[in-house]
Length: 529
Figure 1 (cartoon, rainbow, N blue to C red):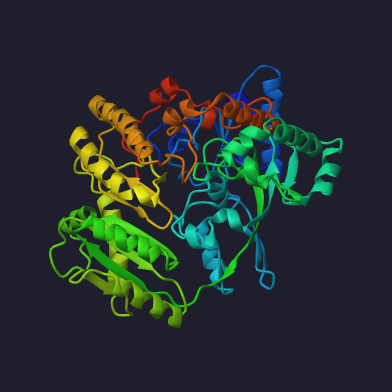
Figure 2: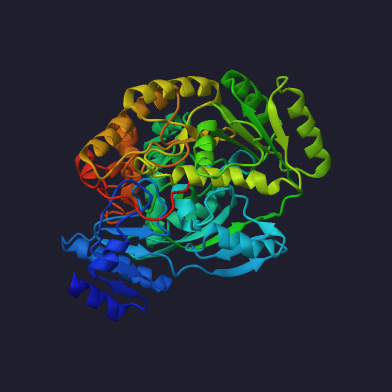
């Protein structure tokens, strides 16, 4: 490895490290896994990335396999941003290259974080309407395509990406954006890597037409390369959808063009506390028809736990108790906001505890989010790591899901308070397991098995709001039919013939190997939703 690092350092502007302490620093993401890379590269230009991939491709051609793992800020929850071979960190690709205020377009590098981008855009009266962890990179958002809290209203990051520049596994550079059928046909006739790619995808679309049609019947499932259903639509062809939720297995994004929105008008939130979960569900179903910006739910046990540790919101003037807190952000201008707020208050059962946001209590509303952080980082009995986050449960089965969690709590002997977004049916459960003990790791595996059964019994999906990675693939891979598996393998081969980009992620995950990578120490840093 030291000879490889020395060679790559001579041919790239950025750095390539093989020092054990540096490799160790990149061995974990937010998942329950740990995989130490052999080399860590920090490129400074697209040309650097091309050279690194071209080198790995040439090694593979000589039967020396050096897998490539792209990484942003390491916030992946499924083990997709860690790997054994060469890890390419995009931390220096963190610049805004151009802002077109009139056209509301921005050209940005993939290592730019969502928070930093929106800070810069707000100075121009614009923002990228994605409600997610501000530390996540834009490349990571595309690679994982999670369902953010505001996705019901704005459509998520998928709706805002106009074009990307991608470095393929052999080091060639391609631009992915929508094009007409005639332009796509002309592109497929070119004698180039891009032409070969379009020809292969065209053959895949024709060969697996029936499988793709069946796949389109499962819109709430990001497993595999689900967006193949969006590649050929009406009178256009677009390979860009395949990059969403691909988790770095098809190429490395080096440049992004986004369209953005004007900063929204005045917003106001409503907090409602329910002790009757059936009443809560009736209210949630009603309020979602009012088209709010976000609808967040939180088990009151989470707020109570935070209160016991000193983080109590001033909004709760009495004992919190058991039940569910609902926070609705209507996100409209003043007239429409007041109208919808009034309608929401009218349907609440008499005596229901509720608080409208005002300039005086805004900080108290923020305290609820901070209470969630307090709960996630209270490690009295273990670590609340994201084992199976971003699961989809349809609203009609939400009550069954809550009942199933009660049964699961009794079976595992742990508390499983839920939080998440009712508007997007995206939910999180963070049990506190001790990953340092053998019994704790056994409980993690048992939780994965039983929680998967619960989600499936509620007609939900582990990959409804995010892709599978290494962790979810433990349970999801065996559910694929032969045709669908062949479809995804064909897409992977079209983009990455030698299989060097993030292998054993998504469909390539192997149960024994993934279990071998379970962390035996707690991950440092703050746990976030």
